Amino acid sequence: MTRPNMFIVHVSDAPASARFYGDLFAMEPAFESPHFIAFDLGGGVQLGLWSGVAETLPQTRASEVCLNLDGAEAIDARFEEWTAKGVTIVQKPHDAVFGRTFVAADPDGNLLRVAPLD
Image (cartoon, rainbow, N blue to C red; front, side, top):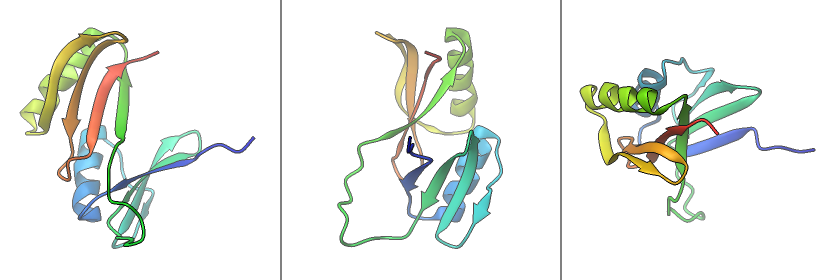
């Protein structure tokens, strides 16, 4: 079976975004070039940050990077940690149908959801 193995987030400055994501998730890049930086997420899956612009592709963004944590207390603690770092919060912690969650944004406005483990 063929499975997706890379998720790409479009950013305006790949190195700056890599510093943001690296700090937020405590990880180092696995690959670096001036306009594309990738992080290994485990299991052969990578998160790519790409500042290359493709004029032929739509620029609409409608996705989220999701970090799953174990329990509401861990989610609230991560909210406090990210708030202290100055991360933009677009939706404060609340209880949704799937459990405790909040949403932050990277410097380009890409969404980062923190939610419970399934």
